Image 1 (tube, rainbow, N blue to C red):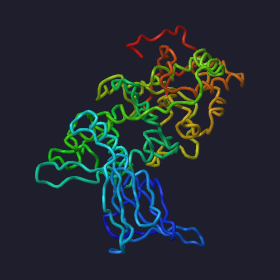
Image 2 (cartoon, helix red, strand yellow; image 1 turned 45 degrees about the vertical axis):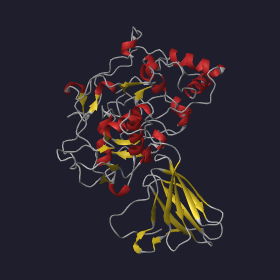
Image 3 (tube, helix red, strand yellow; image 1 turned 90 degrees about the horizontal axis):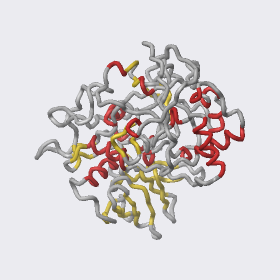
Amino acid sequence: MHRQTATPKRFLTQPWAIAFKTLVDEGYVISTACNVVVKVKIDPSTGAPTVQSDPTDATRVLQIPTGRQPRGIVVNSTDKAVYVMNYISRDVTVIDLSGPVERVIATLSSTALPAPGTPEDLLHIGKELYHTSIGDFDPPAAGQPAISGRMSNNGWGSCASCHPFGLSDNVVWIFGAGPRRTIPQHADFAPGDPTILRGLNWSAIFDEEEDFELNIRGASGGLGLIVGADGVTPEPTVAAFTPANAGRRQLKVRGQNASDALKTYIAKGIRAPISPVSKTDPDVLAGRQLFTQNNCQNCHGSSLWTMSRVRAAAPPDASLLNAGQLQTELRPTTTFDATAFNEIRATAVAPLGAGGYNPPTLLSLFAFPQTFFHNGSVNTLEAVMQNVAHRSDGTGGVDGLTNAAQRAQLIRFLLSIPPPATPAQPLLPRASPPLSATGSRRGSSSTPPRNYRKLSPAQR
């Protein structure tokens, strides 16, 4: 490896692809989040790679600029040129390898970008910001320099670093709320309806996509998108819930609001993976019936395949919050174990979880075949189904899934859930017991609800 000593530094975030020369042990690696290519040399005896310095500045790594979000790379047959496919900027970067220092000699457009100022452009800007660890923004005023590098500290991370293609890396990270498996974002919003938003994160600690400004600033160390009156300085009063973060002054890209663009991409640009499991498979049909009979839709119903909702405009009334969580969206659970080795917050205090968790979506569950529950405590759906309290929660503790063959059928159904599958008819969820001041439930009961009733379309 190479230790870069000059500043500003830039991490080689999300190495995506690599291409080697034919005649020598040299190759080129794409950093898709930082929009650069770096050069490596391979030790032929050990196979160990070494990142190469810039021949003109030994304190820096040789970083060859590309277009936005490079995803493909190839060296030509004579080892004289590299071609890089840039997904977001829709072009190809041509790099000359024949001189003492590699250099870009051409950028070839592959297809037109959306017209500036259009809704398509807004979504495309959001896609760009989601996948970059840098971020390039308009000047705050005419004659002033453009703004760059706000998405993370030195290119440390992007949204897509943990959410590749807007989905999940299946990794459990230690956050301020505790250990949290990455939640895919294809079901933050109801399919086809960006007005319906689920409570965000495992503990429902956010009620707006704009609240992820805190992740940009905290987890990634960036300066963020929400700004003060000068259009540059990060706005200091940014928090979850209050004040509301939607519609605040923000950086712009091509004249469009950057934070609005990110939200648009999440709502409209992240596609739910489509399961290869047939909807007419007899086990799928039997599993769907078992799903309904056991009232799994009590937590995992509706078109979102979760009953979690943001039910009021931001900021929420203080009565809806407890310990920094939307308490109405938490469901009691047996998956929280305060003694587990990874149940710790990034701040080294007791994690959230005693009051329950925000039910995750089941949409496209097949695409995330392992690492389940908030802390990744089990690795298979079979292990999930071994949790009797969990599988019988919808029936008030009456276990209707004691038969292993039926559990296998239910799992088969779960693996078939993609769009446009008809969602299970949701039933009126049981009222959750209130949270105590410490975030735990008071007066929880395993008594099954006496009268389920169907939700009206307006309630779903």
